[in-house]
Image (cartoon, rainbow, N blue to C red):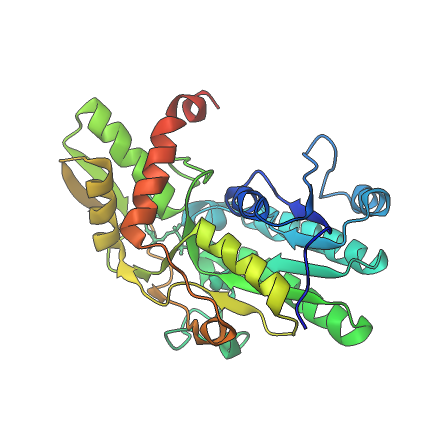
Length: 316
Ligand code: GFB
């Protein structure tokens, strides 16, 4: 049975972030009523505020895209904040959704919840079969808790709460901070600055040998809407392209996207993290959804957005 979003009050929690803002763009094509309270109207860390807001505004469906996120360094350094803040957001929103009878909720996880040494490509069944990657263990634990909350509220109370497990993402509205960002935005801003300043070389963290899969965020938003409409079940569905690249060749792609002509220098004093992380997307393919944005096209679209927003981003 499919879930119809038409006429529904739909809350995108985290609507200003990379994923949330893309969901807002995607949901504009659906005939639903979007609810997007900002931080001054609703503090997601406060259980009382979340309870009260849901009681008053009565969302029927929720996309839970709000999270404290960051790249490998931010995850590794702010370990307590990543665990504590993410657990609080999930507990508050998922429990209040149950308490107020929300019809459907989609929770956004992350591919880092899978064991560090999982067989590649990583199938959904690999969850909780081995130790986690150290650099993002706190974030992964919080996301596993969110997946399990959805699963347990389904088992015990019959709530239609589902989870999606996206691979590494990139796109408009990402965080382009040089230290805290994920690799796509971090390198894009570094190459852009080096081009403007005429610098001879750009540092790329780690050895360049790890492999990652990258999904354009608008593809993820489309997959989330697809799952919201077409999937009800306990399994957290992988969302990705099923294809990976080395960080070295990814850095080369971003160099060519930005038009920078200097050298890449690998700085192995920074961590590599997981050596390989590519998702098995056969479950989602069988359900009827496939990613459609080519990596180079997605990077070009992201770079356009970055250039158009450069002055605003620098002022923040
Ligand atoms: O994007 P990233 O931080 O995500 O790093 P993870 C991916 C790879 O890119 C690592 C290398 O091998 C990094 O060493 N890299 C090269 C860089 N240059 C840079 C740079 O300038 N910045 C960054 N950030 N990386 C995160 C997790 O891990 O993935 C999160 O920590 C989350 O919890 C996210 O799950 C999807 O894939 O290593």
